[in-house]
Each structure stands twice: as structure tokens, then as C-alpha cells.
Amino acid sequence: MDPATKRRLAIGGGIIAGLAVLVIGVFVAAAVINSGRTAAAPVRAYLDLIAQGRGDAATRMVDPGIPNDQRALLTDAVLGQADSRLQVVDVAVDSEYGDQASVTATYSIDGERFTHQFTVVQGEKEYFLLRTWKLDDALVVPVTLDSQGFTSVSVGDTQVPLSDDYGWASASLYAYPGIYTVSAPSDAGQYVTADPVALKVTSDSMGGAQIDPVATDALKSFVLDRVRTKVESCATPPGNMDDACPWSVQDDDLASLTVTQLPSGFEDFSLSGFTTEDAVITIRENPSDWNTDPEDQDVSFTLTGSISLVDPANPQVTFDYAW
Image (tube, rainbow, N blue to C red; front, side):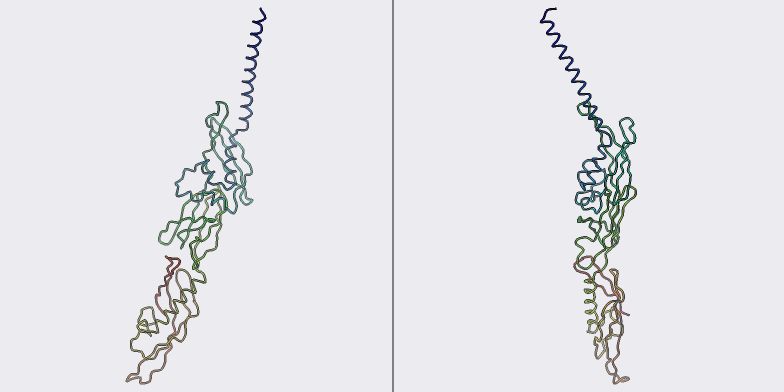
């Protein structure tokens, strides 16, 4: 064999050997990369987003497949302000079968541990060699928000509307695991308030919170002013003829009507209604053939009524009766 042929054979052999080494290297590198691409990886990445308060990104990564009007709590604004978010404890692959894998995640909320099982499926391979896994199970939990009096509530700084049904308002939503603060809506005004309540959401059970308005001292003062004005009206014709005034003052033949005591407060007060403390109107009848010198008579009574807060800034007071 002449030297030129030997040289060509040596070069060809070197190229083939180099290619073989390269192919082996590619497969070795793919094997190393695939060893880190386990079914647990997308689950951990997903849980890390939730733990960081990145609700929008978590929803983009795994769409929960629920109506848009039930996603109000799946946002950065809500999840980011949670009092306690999940902390990832462990993510482990339980089993692989075909193109699917079962992955169990352990997480904690405020020190309490919970587990959740995910199903992960294989996606299309990258560069024909690298495995991919896709997570389709969203970790969202159904929750209900209820109120007897509010038509919206605040979760953190986010105002959430409720559907009102004859005075009972509610919303059926979904949330990521965590503990949230539910409070009165930001537009509740000065006349009502509510103590904040905690909404605890875990994968073990549905979450729920009810928050009802209670009257403030400002509302009591507002209604008391209206009560005193009503008492004055019951001692001033023709206001004394109103059905809500005591029947003893509903007389158009009186010599005098004088308020001698205004109510100083309430025997009972709530958003559903009130009963005042005693008021006194002193009346004197006109002289007659059978009573030429009538004496003063004290009419002691309480007023009852109801309050409407359809417009939170302008309460409406209705007087029912006096007794």
C-alpha cells in the first residue's frame, strides 16, 4: 500500500473514531441531562412559584381550567399578600408507568404539613434525546366567601365582589394553599366595620370564610340624632299625628306638647334594627266641660325602627312604632 493510501485510510479512521466519540459523548451528555429531568422537576418548579407568591406565573405554568370569574384569588396581588404561603418540604417520584409518573409533594403552611399527589406526563423530547415532563394538575382549592350584609369583601388589598341573594351574599372561587386575611370592603364607609377573619386553604379540605358587618359608634350616633329629631317631631303638630308616635300624642285637640326627655341611647341596637331608651313628651289637654283645668300628663315611650345601608354613606332610618 502506497503512503498516500495509508494516509487517507488513517485520516478516514480518525474521522470515524472522532465521530464515534462525539456520538457517544452526545448520548452520555443526554443521559446526564435526563437524569436531572425527573418528573419531580416541574412539580417543584410549580410549587416554588406558589411559595414565592407568584400566582400569575403559577397559573400560566399550569392552567387550572376553571372559569375566569373564579380566578380572582389566583393572582400575585392576593397570593403575594397571604399571611402564610406554602413552604416546600419534599418532592419525590413515587412511580413511573408508560409516559406518566406519580409525584408526591409535601409542603407546610404555618408549620402544619400536608401532602398532595400530582400526575406528570412526558412531553415531546427536545433535540430527539432530552426528556421533558409536563404538569397538568393545578394545586388550586375551592373556597367560599360569605357575608350577610356586605356585597364585597377584601382579601388582602384585593376587593372581591359577592353575588347577593336576598341579603345573603357569597362567591365560589379557587385559591392556592395558604392563609389569607378577609376583611370588610374598602368602600364600607364609616358606619359599618367587621373583624378580620382568617381564610385557611389547604389541599386537604375546602376553605371558607364568613364576614358580617357590625355597626360602628358613628352609626349609633347618626341614628340617635334621627331618633331625637323624631321625638321632637312627635311633639310638634302635625308631626305628632304620625303612626310611629305614641298614640297618646296623636291628638289634634291638645293645649300643649313638650319634650321633657330625649333618649340618651338604645336598649338594643344592631344593623337589623333598634329600640331606644325612654323618651318623655308632656301633654296637656284643652279645657272642657268635664275638665276645666287639665293637668300635665307625661307620656313615656320608646321608639323602634330599622336601618338601611343600601348606600353605605347615607343610612336610611325607618321608624316602626312607639310603645
